Image (tube, rainbow, N blue to C red; front, side, top):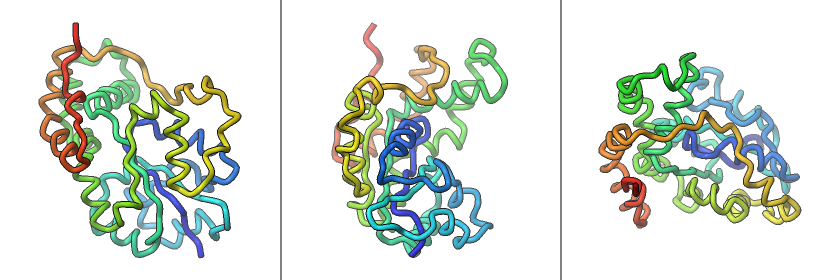
Length: 242
């Protein structure tokens, strides 16, 4: 049987490249087509046989997959089609404070627009935050609802970017357990290596006015996510102490 064993579905700017780089070092994990295939969000005209062929036949003891953050917001009918092909797929979704995620993505977008952070106006950032593309990438509860409507909840691992950043070894071990490989493969990897940032964008503090706008924008989605997961996420909406 062909096809992947696992998929990472997001979120953008939430450590997925770090996950890819570290999982790629595991002797029992393979990314035959690279990190992001972008079939289910942008390449379905190639046909599902093309996508399944990217991973080749499944191999005992080896876990093959891809990590495409744009998969988090694909439509429910597309997710159901995917479930029909790979009903036992292991999924993971990394959630980052949407305020910080949006700011990180906006800074990266500035570079892609061939500007410097100083050249981008406050209004440019506000427009980017409020764009449909940025907002749907932070609509975590909606994404979880769509994926859980097709896949059993136990197949979708929800993890947090804060845990990746603060406890990378524990984070990686939990991820390995979920996709079905032994996390002890990283026992010889130094803490320094695991804490090394990957694909970090330009650093800059989030201006207070922009932070307030983002907090207001994501207040309802964060409260909804907390209800869905049964966790207190109020710290995501807190103003920094000055």
